[in-house]
Length: 235
Image 1 (tube, helix red, strand yellow):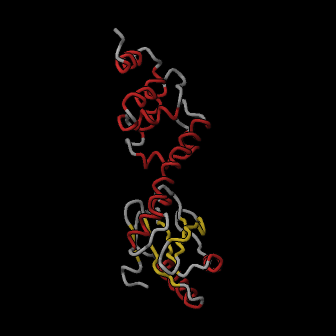
Image 2 (image 1 turned 180 degrees about the vertical axis):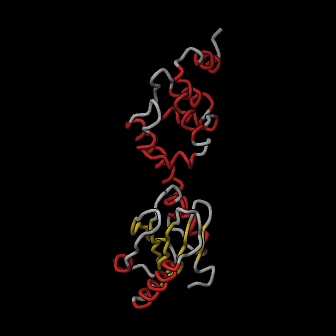
Image 3 (image 1 turned 90 degrees about the vertical axis):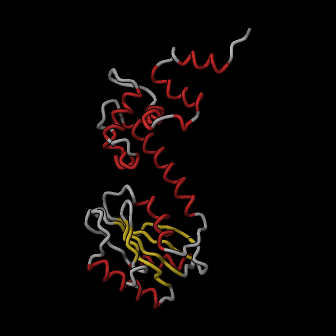
Protein backbone atom coordinates (compact mmCIF):
# COMPACT_ATOMS: atom_id res chain seq x y z
CA UNK A 1 0.00 0.00 0.00
CA UNK A 2 1.38 3.43 -0.94
CA UNK A 3 2.03 5.98 1.72
CA UNK A 4 -0.04 9.14 2.06
CA UNK A 5 2.08 11.87 0.35
CA UNK A 6 1.25 14.42 3.06
CA UNK A 7 2.29 11.98 5.80
CA UNK A 8 5.54 11.27 3.99
CA UNK A 9 6.29 14.97 3.71
CA UNK A 10 5.56 15.53 7.40
CA UNK A 11 7.84 12.67 8.41
CA UNK A 12 10.63 13.80 6.11
CA UNK A 13 10.71 17.31 7.60
CA UNK A 14 12.08 15.84 10.82
CA UNK A 15 15.20 14.76 8.96
CA UNK A 16 15.87 18.00 7.15
CA UNK A 17 18.40 20.58 8.30
CA UNK A 18 17.03 23.09 10.80
CA UNK A 19 17.65 25.94 8.33
CA UNK A 20 15.29 24.28 5.83
CA UNK A 21 12.36 23.56 8.14
CA UNK A 22 10.61 26.95 7.92
CA UNK A 23 10.61 26.60 4.12
CA UNK A 24 9.06 23.19 4.29
CA UNK A 25 6.53 24.29 6.90
CA UNK A 26 5.47 26.97 4.44
CA UNK A 27 5.08 24.36 1.70
CA UNK A 28 3.10 22.03 3.91
CA UNK A 29 0.91 24.43 5.91
CA UNK A 30 0.96 27.70 3.99
CA UNK A 31 2.48 31.10 4.72
CA UNK A 32 -0.07 32.10 7.35
CA UNK A 33 1.05 29.22 9.58
CA UNK A 34 4.55 30.65 10.00
CA UNK A 35 5.60 32.99 12.78
CA UNK A 36 7.42 36.26 12.10
CA UNK A 37 10.67 34.56 13.10
CA UNK A 38 10.09 31.63 10.73
CA UNK A 39 9.37 33.93 7.79
CA UNK A 40 12.45 35.97 8.61
CA UNK A 41 14.51 32.77 8.82
CA UNK A 42 13.56 31.96 5.22
CA UNK A 43 14.94 35.34 4.16
CA UNK A 44 18.13 34.81 6.18
CA UNK A 45 18.58 31.43 4.50
CA UNK A 46 21.41 29.90 6.50
CA UNK A 47 22.89 30.15 9.95
CA UNK A 48 26.28 31.34 11.08
CA UNK A 49 28.59 31.03 14.06
CA UNK A 50 26.93 27.96 15.51
CA UNK A 51 23.39 29.34 15.25
CA UNK A 52 20.89 28.26 12.62
CA UNK A 53 18.80 30.71 10.58
CA UNK A 54 15.81 30.33 12.89
CA UNK A 55 17.91 31.18 15.94
CA UNK A 56 19.24 34.28 14.20
CA UNK A 57 15.72 35.31 13.20
CA UNK A 58 14.39 34.82 16.73
CA UNK A 59 17.17 36.97 18.16
CA UNK A 60 16.31 39.79 15.78
CA UNK A 61 12.55 39.58 16.32
CA UNK A 62 12.95 39.37 20.09
CA UNK A 63 15.04 42.54 20.05
CA UNK A 64 12.25 44.20 18.03
CA UNK A 65 9.62 42.90 20.49
CA UNK A 66 8.03 40.89 17.64
CA UNK A 67 7.06 44.18 15.99
CA UNK A 68 7.51 44.30 12.21
CA UNK A 69 7.39 48.08 12.24
CA UNK A 70 10.40 48.12 14.54
CA UNK A 71 12.14 45.60 12.27
CA UNK A 72 11.59 47.83 9.26
CA UNK A 73 13.24 50.73 11.07
CA UNK A 74 16.53 48.91 11.55
CA UNK A 75 17.97 49.40 8.08
CA UNK A 76 20.97 47.62 6.60
CA UNK A 77 23.63 49.06 8.90
CA UNK A 78 21.85 48.13 12.11
CA UNK A 79 20.86 44.70 10.81
CA UNK A 80 24.52 44.00 10.12
CA UNK A 81 25.28 44.50 13.81
CA UNK A 82 23.41 41.28 14.64
CA UNK A 83 25.61 38.23 14.91
CA UNK A 84 25.43 36.17 11.72
CA UNK A 85 23.87 38.92 9.58
CA UNK A 86 26.12 40.24 6.83
CA UNK A 87 25.37 42.89 4.25
CA UNK A 88 23.84 40.45 1.74
CA UNK A 89 21.38 39.02 4.26
CA UNK A 90 20.56 42.50 5.53
CA UNK A 91 19.82 43.67 1.98
CA UNK A 92 17.51 40.69 1.38
CA UNK A 93 15.56 41.54 4.54
CA UNK A 94 15.41 45.23 3.60
CA UNK A 95 14.19 44.41 0.08
CA UNK A 96 11.47 42.06 1.34
CA UNK A 97 10.17 44.66 3.79
CA UNK A 98 10.12 47.28 1.03
CA UNK A 99 8.10 44.99 -1.26
CA UNK A 100 5.55 44.51 1.51
CA UNK A 101 5.35 48.25 2.07
CA UNK A 102 4.86 48.93 -1.64
CA UNK A 103 2.11 46.34 -1.87
CA UNK A 104 0.18 48.01 0.94
CA UNK A 105 0.84 51.42 -0.56
CA UNK A 106 -0.55 50.39 -3.95
CA UNK A 107 -3.83 49.31 -2.35
CA UNK A 108 -4.44 52.88 -1.23
CA UNK A 109 -2.86 54.92 -3.99
CA UNK A 110 -4.11 53.53 -7.28
CA UNK A 111 -6.20 56.39 -8.70
CA UNK A 112 -7.86 56.93 -5.35
CA UNK A 113 -10.21 59.86 -4.88
CA UNK A 114 -9.28 61.83 -1.78
CA UNK A 115 -12.45 63.00 -0.06
CA UNK A 116 -11.21 63.17 3.54
CA UNK A 117 -7.99 63.74 5.45
CA UNK A 118 -7.97 60.14 6.69
CA UNK A 119 -7.72 58.87 3.12
CA UNK A 120 -4.70 61.07 2.46
CA UNK A 121 -3.10 59.85 5.69
CA UNK A 122 -3.67 56.21 4.74
CA UNK A 123 -1.90 56.81 1.43
CA UNK A 124 1.13 58.58 2.86
CA UNK A 125 1.72 56.92 6.23
CA UNK A 126 3.28 53.79 4.71
CA UNK A 127 5.95 55.97 3.09
CA UNK A 128 6.70 57.82 6.32
CA UNK A 129 6.03 55.54 9.28
CA UNK A 130 9.58 54.21 9.62
CA UNK A 131 11.42 57.51 9.27
CA UNK A 132 13.72 58.79 11.98
CA UNK A 133 14.11 62.17 10.27
CA UNK A 134 11.71 64.74 8.87
CA UNK A 135 10.54 64.64 5.25
CA UNK A 136 8.14 66.73 3.18
CA UNK A 137 5.84 65.03 0.67
CA UNK A 138 3.17 66.24 -1.73
CA UNK A 139 0.04 64.50 -2.99
CA UNK A 140 -0.83 65.94 -6.40
CA UNK A 141 -4.51 65.72 -7.34
CA UNK A 142 -6.50 66.28 -10.52
CA UNK A 143 -9.76 68.19 -10.79
CA UNK A 144 -11.71 65.15 -9.58
CA UNK A 145 -9.43 64.86 -6.51
CA UNK A 146 -7.84 61.67 -7.81
CA UNK A 147 -4.19 61.13 -6.96
CA UNK A 148 -1.92 61.90 -9.89
CA UNK A 149 1.38 61.53 -8.08
CA UNK A 150 2.87 61.24 -4.59
CA UNK A 151 6.34 62.78 -4.39
CA UNK A 152 9.05 63.53 -1.87
CA UNK A 153 10.08 67.18 -1.94
CA UNK A 154 12.75 67.30 0.70
CA UNK A 155 14.50 65.41 3.47
CA UNK A 156 15.78 67.02 6.63
CA UNK A 157 17.09 66.22 10.06
CA UNK A 158 15.37 65.18 13.25
CA UNK A 159 13.91 68.63 13.87
CA UNK A 160 13.07 70.03 10.46
CA UNK A 161 13.04 70.08 6.68
CA UNK A 162 12.65 72.68 3.95
CA UNK A 163 9.80 72.88 1.44
CA UNK A 164 10.58 75.01 -1.61
CA UNK A 165 7.39 76.49 -3.15
CA UNK A 166 9.10 76.65 -6.57
CA UNK A 167 9.70 72.90 -6.59
CA UNK A 168 6.21 72.10 -5.34
CA UNK A 169 4.29 74.23 -7.81
CA UNK A 170 6.55 73.79 -10.84
CA UNK A 171 5.89 70.07 -10.56
CA UNK A 172 2.16 70.72 -10.18
CA UNK A 173 2.19 72.77 -13.38
CA UNK A 174 4.21 70.12 -15.21
CA UNK A 175 1.66 67.38 -14.54
CA UNK A 176 -1.35 69.77 -14.69
CA UNK A 177 -2.40 69.11 -11.10
CA UNK A 178 -5.30 71.17 -9.80
CA UNK A 179 -4.70 70.63 -6.10
CA UNK A 180 -2.03 69.60 -3.64
CA UNK A 181 -1.98 68.11 -0.16
CA UNK A 182 1.11 68.99 1.85
CA UNK A 183 2.48 66.35 4.21
CA UNK A 184 5.38 66.26 6.61
CA UNK A 185 6.21 64.10 9.59
CA UNK A 186 7.27 64.86 13.15
CA UNK A 187 9.71 62.15 14.31
CA UNK A 188 9.14 63.36 17.88
CA UNK A 189 5.65 61.83 17.78
CA UNK A 190 3.90 65.15 18.39
CA UNK A 191 1.38 66.36 15.83
CA UNK A 192 1.23 69.90 17.20
CA UNK A 193 2.07 72.38 14.41
CA UNK A 194 5.04 74.64 15.06
CA UNK A 195 5.11 78.35 14.24
CA UNK A 196 7.25 77.42 11.24
CA UNK A 197 4.57 74.94 10.09
CA UNK A 198 1.90 77.64 10.35
CA UNK A 199 3.94 80.20 8.41
CA UNK A 200 4.88 77.70 5.71
CA UNK A 201 1.26 76.67 5.22
CA UNK A 202 0.19 80.30 4.75
CA UNK A 203 3.04 80.89 2.31
CA UNK A 204 2.23 77.83 0.20
CA UNK A 205 -1.50 78.56 0.23
CA UNK A 206 -0.85 82.08 -1.08
CA UNK A 207 1.50 80.78 -3.77
CA UNK A 208 -1.08 78.24 -4.86
CA UNK A 209 -3.80 80.87 -5.14
CA UNK A 210 -1.66 82.89 -7.56
CA UNK A 211 -1.34 79.81 -9.79
CA UNK A 212 -4.93 78.61 -9.34
CA UNK A 213 -3.67 75.46 -7.60
CA UNK A 214 -5.52 74.74 -4.39
CA UNK A 215 -3.68 73.75 -1.23
CA UNK A 216 -6.35 71.35 -0.01
CA UNK A 217 -4.74 70.27 3.26
CA UNK A 218 -1.53 70.07 5.22
CA UNK A 219 -1.01 66.93 7.28
CA UNK A 220 1.47 66.48 10.10
CA UNK A 221 1.89 62.73 10.50
CA UNK A 222 3.34 60.35 13.06
CA UNK A 223 3.37 56.56 13.12
CA UNK A 224 -0.20 56.21 14.35
CA UNK A 225 -1.98 59.55 14.01
CA UNK A 226 -2.03 62.86 12.17
CA UNK A 227 -3.04 66.52 12.36
CA UNK A 228 -5.07 68.01 9.50
CA UNK A 229 -4.97 71.77 8.95
CA UNK A 230 -8.20 71.51 6.92
CA UNK A 231 -10.04 69.55 9.61
CA UNK A 232 -8.93 72.06 12.24
CA UNK A 233 -10.04 75.06 10.17
CA UNK A 234 -6.46 76.26 9.67
CA UNK A 235 -6.68 76.67 5.88
